[in-house]
Image 1 (cartoon, rainbow, N blue to C red):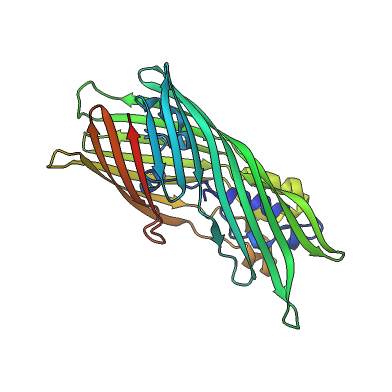
Image 2: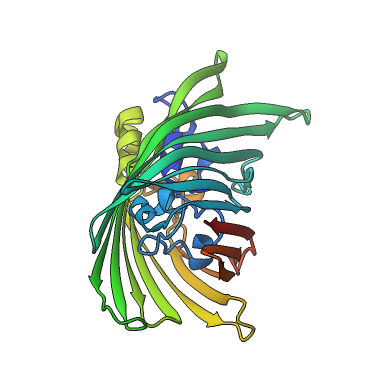
Length: 374
């Protein structure tokens, strides 16, 4: 969850200082943070995160746990980038997967007029379970112990040239993230190679992390506990498998940023009236093509994705020019991704190697992965 950002932002901003001081409460240290989830590991990141209706491996625990029901027997998956490890097995009619993931430590860029730094790292470990109660329907649920490490400081230069600490935030906290999902085959035929259509639905419940915030006031440095909100996400996706060779995916993520505003109002009351961060729908599309190799040794899969990301940051709507500059309106951003896999089956087992670029424009943010089914 690096990945992961616009949601916590507002929660951080809300709680950063005494409610009587708006500029301190909504500290500029967090004005550019986007706390939206990010695709962990390989393959989903190469598809722009449009994975909810695919969900055909261990990473389904994160995107749509109903997809775990598609794991045939046993599976082991490893990938770099946002590091991922998972192992799954069949238990009667159920498929169970245990997993762990961790993002790289990320240094976030602050407003040019704000001296300071902010670093975050996300991690999670948990398990998921999937089942197919009827042929066309799969259901699943996962629970993860979701962690945030955060460290930041904002400073100013005194007239004598010495650096003065104005604000500091730090914390390591874990909360439970629960995701439920469903996969429904809308159309399929018994004939191999003919089109099929699948619908994927997933809901990821929001939660609050906690951190310690210190700020300079009339009586010196004062410290208190702040809440960092990660909003709920509702996802709907479609997968069109046109033939054995190609497929197309579309997905929309409803991010409940209104939950962040609720946290803001609880912490600062009426001071939040000139700030806003509305709910959004982020669209994603992707396609994957399978190319059988002439050597007969396997299949090459090539994929690409596009996603349209919201700013996910708090916006000031009042008349104060300083706050307008710090919490200004930011633009949506298009992100293109690309990936490829080599897939082979042998003696009843399957092996897949992945390489993906999460962001072709500002990346490449490469990740590598391997999946073994046996």
